[in-house]
Image 1 (cartoon, rainbow, N blue to C red):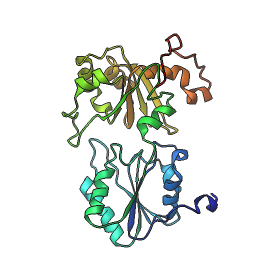
Image 2 (cartoon, rainbow, N blue to C red):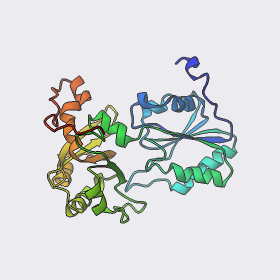
Image 3 (cartoon, helix red, strand yellow):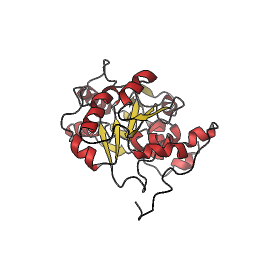
Length: 280
């Protein structure tokens, strides 16, 4: 890779931490800042969702420390991860905290940054493409489409206790957001679907699960809100997954560009018959 490409980019100072988003999987979606950090870091503390192809871009001799969290499995405590970043920085290391997607979108990057502030450690934030946008784009599902929605809601399917968050206003979201994108929701999709249906969403509303988004293992399940739980169980699919609820799912039949590369025949715009009334 040409050094000229990185010549004007900043250096990681010894004793500092960069909190960097690695995007949803495909290393081609890394930002230049992210690759620049991988080329410099002495220690890379990374999540389970960071693709190994991204880690392969690290400099020779860099130490890789796994700090992944997976629901229902033994995982490092968040406070311990944050304090480990402080410890490494105080050793004079150039520290890269590499997180799947974007550090500030359900990535707990804010908590880690606050710990660094608390201990006087300098840091930089490098945004990444969040899976709720990039992962769905790789599945041929746009999060907005002017024939469908002028709003989208992003939410998490579980809180720090591992349960469905009790502070989510399901009725408000069901009535106010035509498209709902959910992170970490597969495990509790039965309860979540019931909440949305009880709040007025149709059981026939399209739903898609995008597993291992933007990787070679990407799998997409299209179903409906009423059948979501049963179809996920029957499919045998496992997290990580992004779940999207809304009519934008129907656009996959027209926009599945990855499927087209493998021979899938795409169809015309499913909303072409609707009158266009202004832009999104």
